[in-house]
Length: 536
Image (cartoon, rainbow, N blue to C red; front, side, top):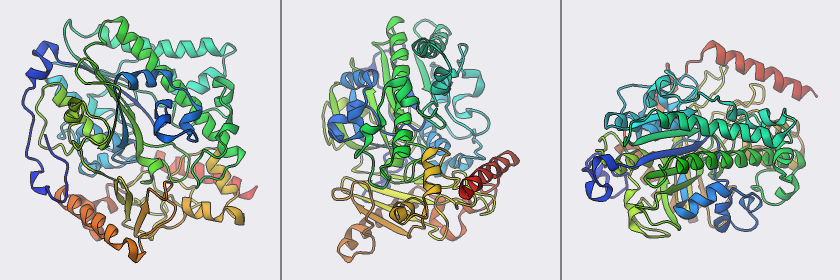
């Protein structure tokens, strides 16, 4: 196993690998199945988090019975974070078990290319006798398609992929409940087709990755399809979001897609039970980053961007009914899966296996993982006029503080209005901000969302949970800032982060800044749509 870096244990980096854990997992033929349920842009929305987030939270107004059931049987993590709040870099990190910036062209979204020399956990498991496969999104829009999972060869979608357009499909049908059932059966049949192909006694590794929680969803679908009332969001959303009907409805529709995701989890779980595979299956549920199309969320290192749900269940091996507060980086999952399978972890992996936490039987702060998490980002989409440059950031978060470093504070963090604010997804909330950007009462929210940011940001999470009051320049907090800054420097140096050389970073030059014709055309289309909004 590769230990995650701490200021006092840099020397342990790239030292350990795990031996075969026959004493825990039994003979080779008894290796656990691995079921990874991974939603696109899900964030941390499930009713099982209500007890942690409180009665006034968003999780208090939704019900996710299937996710909750698995959480009750298993272990609920409260401090899990995406390694990068952008789809492809996050997935590059999870699949490789490395910091995203060590995956070459996999560290960006548009233009990502997979380096086949990088070990990935699914292919390692395949080499060790596992039957592997997936449905829907794994690693995209990078090339070759889903390369770190073996490519198209291991895609299982014989029943279709309409689940990814859940609200679009169901909204068009006269019988809404029947349409929902059709999509849930689609997910179930895809999984059953995968199981049918495995040999008797062969362990499996399956990735279920629907994208329905990614934009775009149907306006009003949260209420129409799921009975969710957008007015119940009054006073519950983050303070940096204006509490207005348009934004509440947009968020409400997103929550409808979360309920569809929960139903999909239920369909897969049912198939697992019916086939007799449940008992020997390690189930992991999570998502790649926060909500899309909302400020300070997806593509941002604030809590709404990187904080994600994580639930792990394997009742026969790990005591369930627990809540774990240790910090987890989702890249920790790759070494976790390998250790659970009794397979040696490559020395390239930076992630720290969660098996000690799972075996501990402890709740709360177990002390098995790091007391912090380190995350970052480079280019998401960018704009052609700006040279398609990234907005490079790194952040370190512990129980009390969030420290962010914006390496190029002169660059627009989300892009400009004229160029379409490209690093925030299209939707009603983005349009509302553009149309209301000049109104004095929303000036502060606009600046927090889209304005220039300083080189350093520091937030006291106990007093400022929505990270709106930057303390980086206050002398009172200088010791905290200096400590976290020093930790960040140590991690970056030890892991050879290219951003250490900020003035000559590879991410600021070709091929990382290249843009292809289709992306440019997409940007130009969005720019035209934004201009129409501005002219209204």
